Length: 163
Image 1 (cartoon, one colour):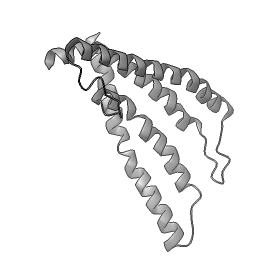
Image 2 (cartoon, helix red, strand yellow):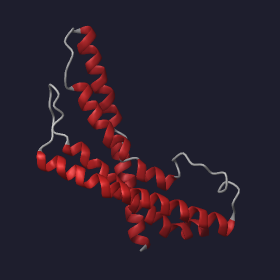
Image 3 (cartoon, helix red, strand yellow):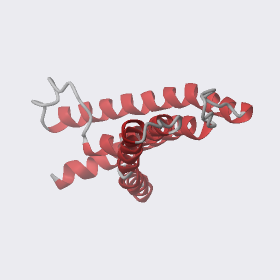
Image 4 (tube, one colour):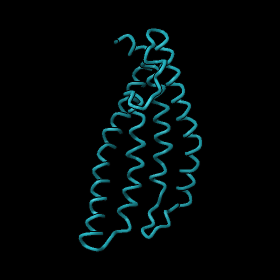
């Protein structure tokens, strides 16, 4: 079980490391759009939309790893002062809520992503790209978030022993 939990954490870390480079693509696309519009007088129809489609995976793939790092915004009125067994229980409750949130999000987003794929949904803009690749990242990240919450629940006793 511990090996599986560490593998999930490693996968989410790897995806986070990969996704963080997408911000450079977004910056390049926005720079290209500004130059095209103001320097060359020829704005693109695709650069802003592609940047928006890339931002989804950039944002979503960071969530599971940030859960592991404790990087999300948290209301820690109780947990900041808790120690020992109370801190352990509060950590597990938080992880259970994160896993439940991911499972609910997966439940509702997967049919939408599959429907987008089956219909060949497009954006109906001038560029008109297919949308299912971008929509597929929501159920994927929801699954990864739930798996990371479960992995952290498995590793939490180990983290407490190491501290």
